[in-house]
Amino acid sequence: MAAIKKAGSAAGIVCSVAAIIAIVLGNGHVRTNERGLELIGNAESCRRDPYVCPAGVLTDGLGNTHGVKRGTIKNDQQIAAEWENNILDAESCVNRYGNGRNLSDDTFSAAVSVTFRSGCGNMRKSTMFALFREGPKAYRSACSQFPRWVYGDGRVLPGLVTRAGKEGTLCLDGLK
Image (cartoon, rainbow, N blue to C red; front, side, top):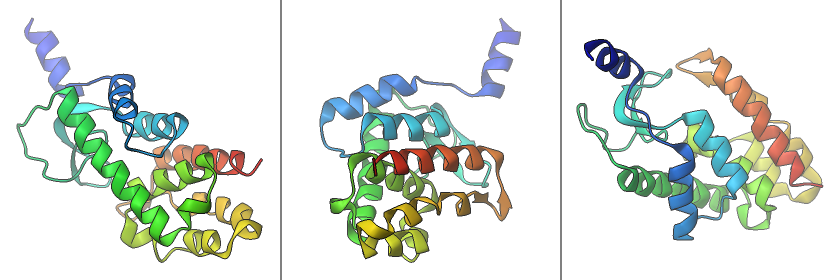
């Protein structure tokens, strides 16, 4: 039994991304589509206990960095509520600075994903958002910007390279 506990604590206390997505979608508050939520959720993975992410930030749930306290274990409802708030914050940023209301659901969801992980402060002044603001003729160019957003703590992170590729694909799928 001790070996199981030790292995469990080394890996963290995981939770189901699919269960959290189901709760958030069931609430009906987010615009980000299921494909976008799956992209974000699967990239972040779900942890009930706090951990330090590759960028060196104390994190829990599905990429939540707000009000995280060491030693706190969260349930599905808490994780879903925090994730939904974080998604809504990213959506607000995309709407305000990235012409989000005029983007297709897939393109919008891709923009929300990169905003979720990079922060509104970085995205609002980005070339990507400037291109989204230019309108539909610049959307393809905006979608080509995702590979620029692969840094964490000043270095290229392989997980972000993979995620940026998926975000770029989702963004382009919204232009079809």
